[in-house]
Length: 261
Image 1: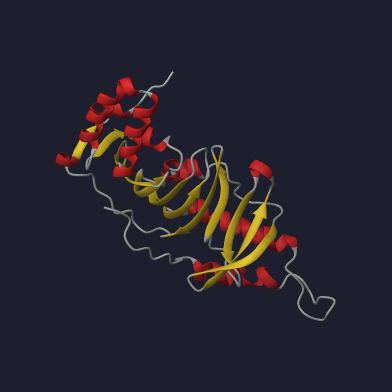
Image 2: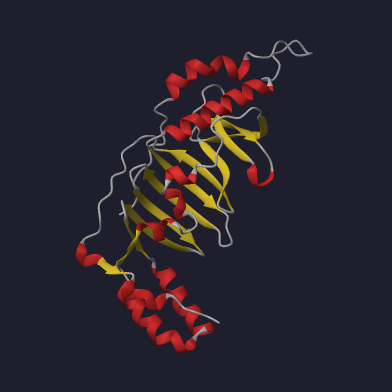
């Protein structure tokens, strides 16, 4: 299982490019040296608003990057607005797979994750170690089944719910500024447009030359900063539940939940 090869292609680039190419570079007149001046702030705000509108309108999206919570996590997910999500998340060097379909979710914990549970119990709750080891052996190589809402509460995996993940992002902005230097990825250079400050700051990364397709977004989800690359725009999320023989219930492996007073 996994996400597979990423296309990272922008389906709306052509349509948006024609509408916004003039906004990117023609709002200003000639600069003091006779060359073209930088885009006016209003043009940056218009372009960022268009990018946010596109982002909120996608039916599905690929999200790849880092969520910098108390425990930093990297994610590589493909989610849609029908409750489907598939991909991986990594924390403390352990990579785990996740599948969400409607109201059910499954997590396949990697061996490093399972061993970290054993180490934690051995160090902080040795009296619980037998129950932890029993649960680990049940979970090893199996998909642990949870209600989807429990999976989606997990930092990083809350990105699987696109509606809630982006709910607090503004639909439009009245001001924006270009920050940092253009960056290149996959042969394309992008610029960062930023609005707000502190916990309310949000940045979108759009093609440098023209167009408003969001190639990336930096924002705060919950209390955690998220820095994400975006792709797989409107591509179907191809997901199916694990085979029944490969599933164990969360109840069967609850011994992995070590309680420390």
